[in-house]
Length: 96
Image 1 (spheres, rainbow, N blue to C red):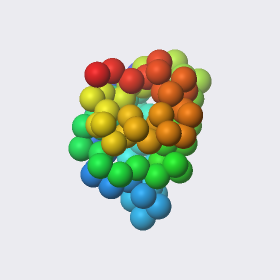
Image 2: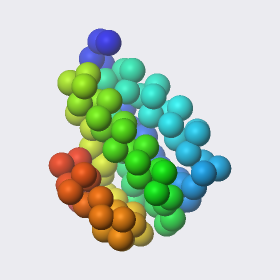
Image 3: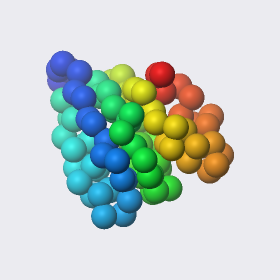
């Protein structure tokens, strides 16, 4: 994989099972290009599977020595992460 310019992926308001496949495909394409920034300020509802997808994407980026950041996570997203006990997993990738 060659390192390119940072890709930005904007998350939709609702990240549920209906939306997760599309988000996964966009993240896969972005991670093939290089570093990824996920814009998460619009998120109003997020499923557990979507959060696990983001953890997996971050791990893929790490394995390929790419930066992976989640910028401006919404209050709803932060609450879901906290409620599921995933704060430690997200702490290194989240920026306010």
